Length: 91
Image (cartoon, rainbow, N blue to C red; front, side, top):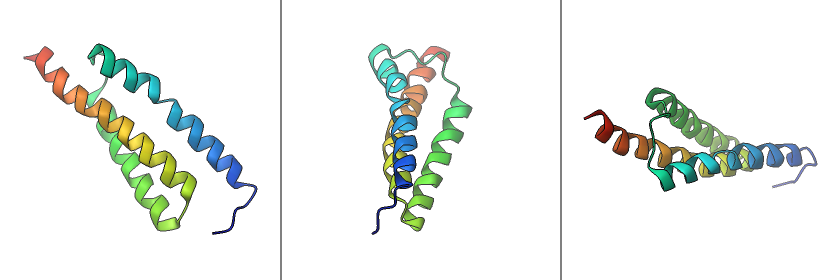
């Protein structure tokens, strides 16, 4: 695996976009408030992140793999909480 200087752009983008989900996941875990979270959006987003992860694995693109693996965990956390706690409020 050769490292190219342009990989720094990929790693930088991966870091920033992945870290941007930490506050939402943390707030949702802490507050259990999911009232402002769209089930449809997070379902589609989580599926899209999973596909990006698969694509990154196929392409051996480690910035894509790393970022999307972490983002998938964060997005799944929020999605599961939305499913779990959103159902309680609706019922």
